[in-house]
Each structure stands twice: as C-alpha cells, then as structure tokens.
Amino acid sequence: MDEKELISQLQNEKKRGKAFEILVDLYQKRLYWHIRRIVISHDDADDVLQETFIKIFRSIENFRGDSSLFSWIYRIATNQALDFLKKKANEKNCTIEDLQYDRSSHLEADTYFEGDEIERKFQQAISSLPEKQQIVFNMKYFEELKYEEISEILGTSVGALKSSYHHAVQKIKNYLESH
Image 1 (cartoon, one colour):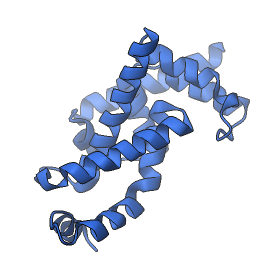
Image 2 (tube, rainbow, N blue to C red):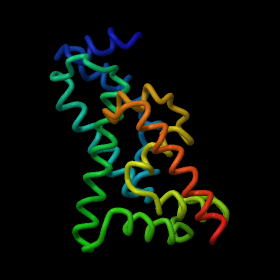
Image 3 (cartoon, rainbow, N blue to C red):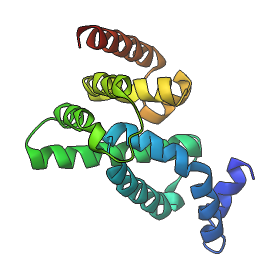
C-alpha cells in the first residue's frame, strides 16, 4: 500500500482501525529508536512511543498532506519526546541537556542497554550536545536520513542542518578525546 492509500484509509472512519495497525507495523521500530535516542531510557521510550501513536491516531483526520506522512509522524514523535524531557527536567529543576547527560551516565543500569564502555561514552558525548544538535546528529548518523527529510521534519533549512551536524561531530570528537 502506498502512502496516499494509507492516508486515505487512516482518514476513513470505517477503515481507520486496520490502517492504523499497518501504520504501527510500518513505523513502530523506527520511531522507538528515534525516541529512545532522545529520552535514552527504554521504559520512557516505550511510554513516549505509546503517547506518540495515540496523538497520531487522534490527529490523523487533520493531516493535510503539506509534508509526507513519514515527516509528520517523525515531527510528532520528536515533539512528544522533547515535551517528555522538558517535563522531567522541570521536575528535577535542571536543563534537558543536564538530564540527558545524567541519564547517559547511568546507561549501564539500564537492563536494555547492550553497549560497552565505548558506546556509553559515545552516548554521553551525544548527550553533551545542545538539544537541536543532538536531534540532527541522531537523525543523520543513526537513522541515515537525508538533510531534506530532516529539514521537512524539523522545519529547518538544509544549510542550518549541515552546520548543526558539522558542529555536533566536532563536539563529539572533542568530547571523546578529552574523556
């Protein structure tokens, strides 16, 4: 089924349930990892993923097609993850970056984290980046999205994204060299 047909079925009240199952099957794993890289914790990623799919289900009638369905879904997932982090950071009275860095420092306690010391350091380096650079780096490096796709998701120019990615790579290199 192509994207137009899926959107049509998602916006048809009688076909929405089955179409939504297809949408979940198509995007669940990718969205989980996208969210997980932002919130770091497996349990939190599961919660945010569930909230993301609820929001998509409730909002699909309002999808206008100004962007691709993929971009629209990723934008919702990104915003849900960032909103989650803002709430947690407010509860702990710290910045999002401090919260993420703290979470990445305790990855070995996460039973779902399978990386070694190098992977943990890499995650700490990513967590030390400003929020926008983290997201751009994760989308480009791990998810291998094109700058044009990231631009559509984040509403940022390709040039600004290339600059953010370049700065992120440099900061990660510097972090890893000094730690």
